[in-house]
Image (cartoon, rainbow, N blue to C red):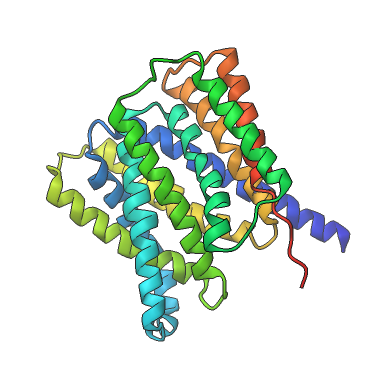
Length: 298
């Protein structure tokens, strides 16, 4: 029995780790391609095709979708707009103007805002360990930017990075509210909200950006991101969460900060000093501590 449980946990950890690697590689693929495809159109195409790949699962749940209440539709629509239209659209725009490692570090402020907003919106008070984690993370961020008074990237990139962090934090809180009662499956929540957000992203992109001539290579990138890094990765991540605790999955997810930095050095030719690597590791430890929550006793 113990061997079976251990085997399941090992499998779930490997699944989650594979997902984080796929998600980290997404940033590199986007950075490679973002100069050829306008950001909002790019994001709309990625999540639009991902929604199509998730459609078979939605069709299997069509009876559940038919029975969704008006409140369910309102929540899923708001989640789709905030998490996909705002957050993913903001991410693609930011990656056009900022280095991947810099933006990855800034995006981890999401956990800080969730901890703070959770006090007022969800009545969840951070523990002492979480407050220490927030402090450690901020130390890591300050250490990272200390040798760079002239910040890399354009100012508009930092504006959209801030917008994306806030949108991502709000999306996480909305997602928690939607899933709190457990009356909707992950596939329905993901498929419906992603479809709504992707359609709006694509409409805004097509209305505000000139549709480019997309090369075969870029189509391969878009479809790979949609099928493998989005539809497959989201499904595999949700499967791993059936076994892993929030602390374990959060720690694996936080490893993306170092993964993205490493991939950026290898594939984008970015250079990071020893101090930068140390600061990223400190920030990763801090953000991991921030994600550790007490399990409520019932």
